[in-house]
Amino acid sequence: MSNQVTKSDNSEPLAPAGEPAIRVIAMPANTNADGRMFGGWLMGMLDQAAGLVAARHALARVVTVAADSITFHAPVQVGDELSLYARLVKVGRTSMKIEVEGWRRVRHELETIKAISGLFTFVAIDEDRRPCQVPPMNETRLLSDKADK
Image (cartoon, rainbow, N blue to C red; front, side):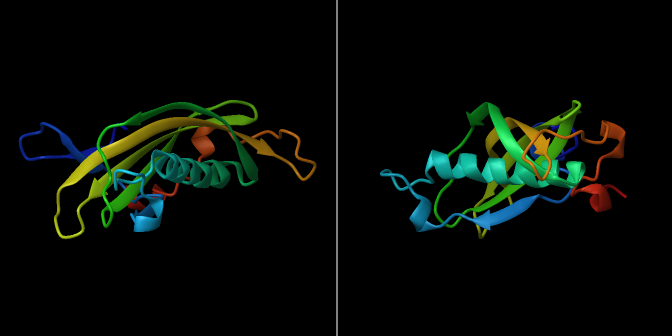
């Protein structure tokens, strides 16, 4: 994501700018056999964040048609705060591509670390569950609109 808050030396980003689409606490029920957060749970959280942005842009029901890419950058531990930032990156006639990043923060610390990222494709559907047209990119209604003003 391009709008990122960086450290004072402009090295690594601390987190994307704007408000997260979702913020959750990693709980024990979602761990794998090693005690870290299960990858499937993290992927589901990315999909939910992307779906919120897609639905807000389309103002319609949306369905996930592809998880184009998912990259695990760092493990998420029980008790970590996970903030998911999502943004619309491309719009077709009925489809949208949404980029999502998940940043972890140990609950009692300030530093954030990118834990997971992905790119998802959604299609807007009508009441008959058929693809329907979405607004062009310049008419987007992102969750972070208020944060950017």
